[in-house]
Image 1 (cartoon, rainbow, N blue to C red):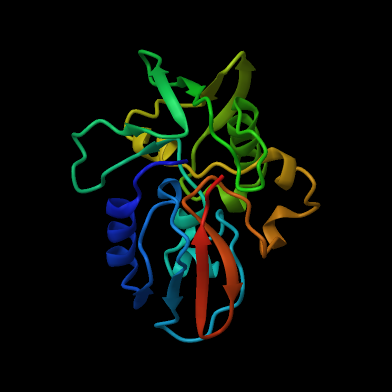
Image 2 (cartoon, rainbow, N blue to C red):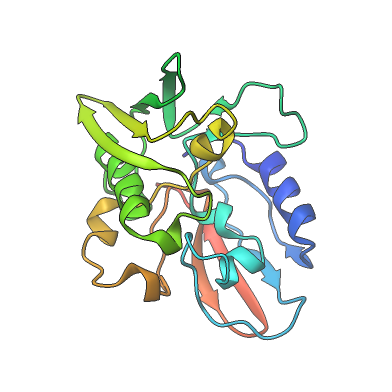
Length: 214
């Protein structure tokens, strides 16, 4: 998405304690052409960018958010602050917090130029539902349905305390992931996301990203 990502990048880098060399920290939507290079601060990693796996290099080094985005931005340091709409333009929880209706944002494209849609949100949560290894938040997912631009996700119990976890979930493209035979072993060497950067090169010494101008 063509939004300012600088505050988000700063938070992610601090949290991950990364040693980062920045060359031109402009956002995806600003027409920047300079790369972002992340040094390897904590020993050898393998080129694994699976956004669902906590053992991937993307998770360990903290750069998943450069490529993938959530339904809403949640500030963990300000838990009382309402999440900022991101890939979701709006959402409405049921009174018992056992379901949420999420409306997909218009005008978003994946980094390969394909349109983002509500189908991607539904696919992502269905993927998490059927793949226990991807359900790190232990969400009791029961049913995922779509109508127009809205997806309704139903849970087996109240998700009042898990609202931030639901809305902060990374969304992946159905047209890419639905073709993967075993997503749990997919290293996602060429990530397609909606985030502000594209993975350019990956080595044991450094990872280089270029701005996503999609």
